[in-house]
Image (spheres, rainbow, N blue to C red):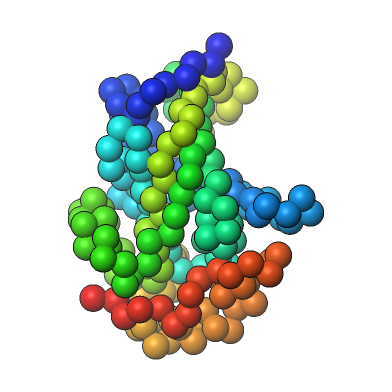
Length: 194
């Protein structure tokens, strides 16, 4: 029932770009470390960079497990499910890295997200993922659900922050600079936003 793909193109690309939510999964190398699974949303915060590379915007939050795991070992899986239309699940297994604001690649990468106002979300990093295995499966058991709109709560919460207050917010959070398993997380202070 499942199929492997050599590239992210055609109908596969259209499918993942149309989904309003996707999920990321990472884990540390330690066998007793915690697996992290996160939902991601906000229209315009995901981009296909080329046929084997995708990226998404990493916004302010109360932890940085994905960043910590990627900094340690780079392993990541992204997953999209069809909650409307024909059943489908797509997974991209690959290697990822967080690209921070002071990275020379930042200006070129951020240009891939022209339809979202990321300023009010406390943008911390751009997560870039190079696909190693691309697969789809049937998704027959995934329920139908409707997408109404993005929530505005994240932007409302973080729009009032500037670089200094955002750094202070992150410094107070137990699992932003250091992960739950003690791995280096988000480097603080953040480089200034431009």
